[in-house]
Image 1 (cartoon, rainbow, N blue to C red):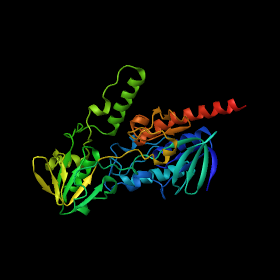
Image 2 (image 1 turned 120 degrees about the vertical axis):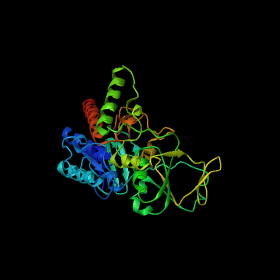
Image 3 (image 1 turned 45 degrees about the vertical axis):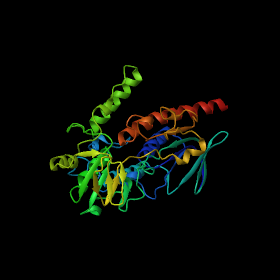
Image 4 (image 1 turned 90 degrees about the vertical axis):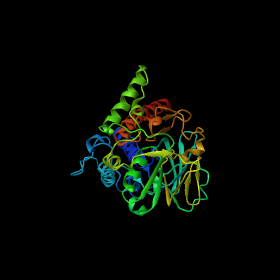
Length: 358
């Protein structure tokens, strides 16, 4: 399979679908290449109990609001997967799957997208692969000595796998707090963080977070200051499960251990904690391996952008990787707003190049 088109979108998750919606409206010829065998993006692989931080009506992709999940305030993983599947069908988006992109290369008047099923040529490429395929585990002394089980958030499926165990959960963000909340109902848990966890007020959810992030971005663009935005509120949203963990008295973090041993973890003062499992809730990096042939990445793994457009390769756009590619761009509603601006810019770019070619 191969082809030529105006735009190739790499990734068929929420950011890729949002881009497809606006590309369809713009009348551009495009294709979405998705490595997954089924719709739903990263949501299909997340743990069963995961829920959105916002009600359905505050979590839409462009054009079609997410239907409410009956009897549920905050939609769960399966509901989001169903929504993304129906969204793709609703707008007849040209998603090709499973297609694995192996590299994007410079060409004279286009970008060449190499895949396991042939080469695509595009005047513009949108990378929307997210972060789920690039889990990050920091190096720690003794990691190879530990005889128990180590896994990252990406491999977590639910608490039953840890029943009766001693489990160390590493990380100070939402994933760590939510996984701690449910694993602690079936196992002995120890939560460790590099710095004391920062909990948001109980009444803050995704609606508030997006509004705060949007105000910060508007202030930055207007040159009226750069308030702390979401960071000032804290790092952890107090979902129902996290509130329950607080009531049970398990929402207390210890300083990060200094060493993994054969049977557990230790600290510099010699104290120890025996453990059967370590769950690393330590985040992700942008999944940008396919862009390596372009030679654009910084040492921190990101690519310099002006908005969503790569500074050194103006035919490349990046969507959905976090705030460095647009305010709240890794959320459902943020992906749509970011994609709208990107496709407007792409449409203008392609129109200008067509005029120049005459």
